[in-house]
Length: 77
Ligand SMILES: [Zn+2]
Image 1 (cartoon, rainbow, N blue to C red):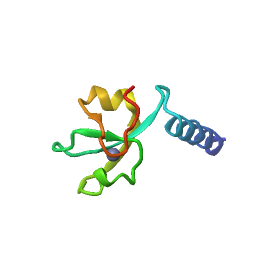
Image 2 (tube, helix red, strand yellow):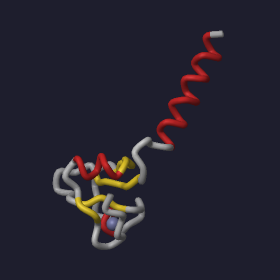
Image 3 (tube, rainbow, N blue to C red):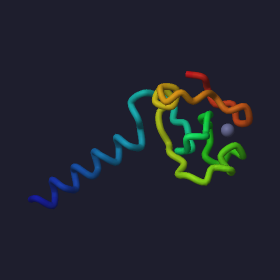
């Protein structure tokens, strides 16, 4: 029974992670020197990133002070 509850918890967690509630997912380099968010994690603007590349909702990226990338042109909101 405990295993079933754990499984349900994992499934709920995964479905939450794969579909963030606040819209479009963008990719941000977790570096203090990075200033932009990207529409794809393969953007050449991210190839210089030596830190972790993190997927997050666009509203979170904007809240972190990131702007839209000039290379891959993600949506602005
Ligand atoms: Zn980009």
